[in-house]
Structures are given as C-alpha cells and as structure tokens.
Length: 84
Image 1 (cartoon, rainbow, N blue to C red):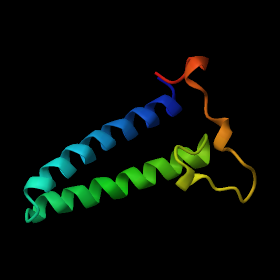
Image 2: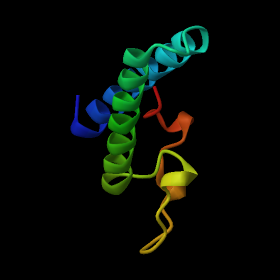
Image 3: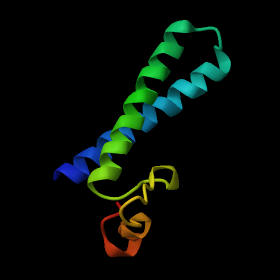
Image 4: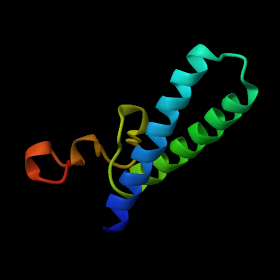
C-alpha cells in the first residue's frame, strides 16, 4: 500500500471512529470523556484531510484551496479503478 492509499485508509478509520462516537454522544450527551475523544479524533481527521489535500487532491470542497490551481477535478473517478 502506497502512502496515498495508507493515508486514505487512515482517514477512513478515523471517520468510522467519529461516526461511532457521534452516535454514542447522541444518547450520552453528558459524557465528557467521549466528548474529549470526539474532539481529539476530529482534530486528527482535519489534519489528515488537510495533509492529503495538500499532497494529492482535495477530498471535499471545503479543502479545495484554489490559490495556485483548481485541483477539485484531479481526484480519480470511480471507473478509473482507484476508488475502492
């Protein structure tokens, strides 16, 4: 697995953790420990997505920095075989 694939894999793992934590927090809104975990993983995801977007292509429009060039369309399309 290359660096790009590893970073995408890691972002997917952190997204899973955040989804599970958000579901837990929906039913346990006063759990301060869970909120701390959520905030930690949310910061981690933001940093990982920012790093990925700077190195390869933006994952969301929020991360599309067009100060140098428009790279939103640089991501591979599903039928190109990279989106697994």
